[in-house]
Image 1 (cartoon, one colour):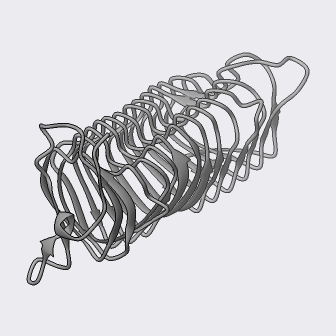
Image 2 (cartoon, helix red, strand yellow):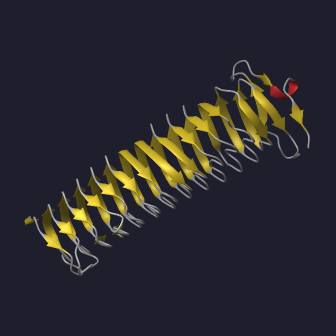
Image 3 (tube, one colour):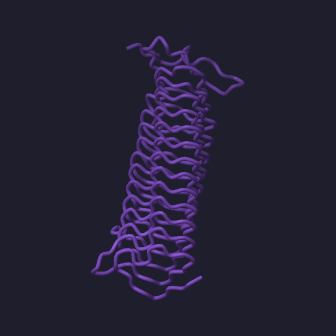
Length: 294
């Protein structure tokens, strides 16, 4: 492997088409303001580098980035690249990791609007992330201990598993398909509308109007905090361990919970059962709770 060390590059396509190189302690910055430093490269390892120019890693294969900084000026850093490993790195430029495949990130600090769009096969562990429209239309996702903050996350995701995560977000998981969330906290209004095949296990869910217009929705031993107008027009099987403020017009299925403040039934198609207790000792909530007909 060729070693390029302690250099500064600012020209256009500075290392274009490189193969079998280790780029160590280098700066991609300077007055020439050149783009696409390592475009169409193969078998590249980047260590302890400062990336301050646009589009450095497009159409790359077998790329490793370690202990480096991609600044806000390093826009659209990784597009159309595959077989990528990123560790202990700051990714702070907009639109990073787009249309990429087989991407692994660990211990990274991500502050990147529109991150991860249309990625296929993205794994993230022990990372923090801030973004808007995070992972739009991504698929084949695995997250473990990820702390995320931002709006409109995980929309149109397919085949995803999230474990031991904390999400402070809005409009998350809209139109998601085959998504599982385990042992996580999900905070934010309008959660998971129009999803199909969403399962939450041992999660805490916080915020207004979650789970509307869902298909094949399943909640297993989940807490719901400050949640109202839940499950409207949804097909749902839910076991909830905390009281819920209100449930509105569940389409079908069963909702088990310890208490409900209000049940809203103003749609004749609403046939979902709301039950006090667990599966062994449940009774109909509508025999005892306040029912509103509006």
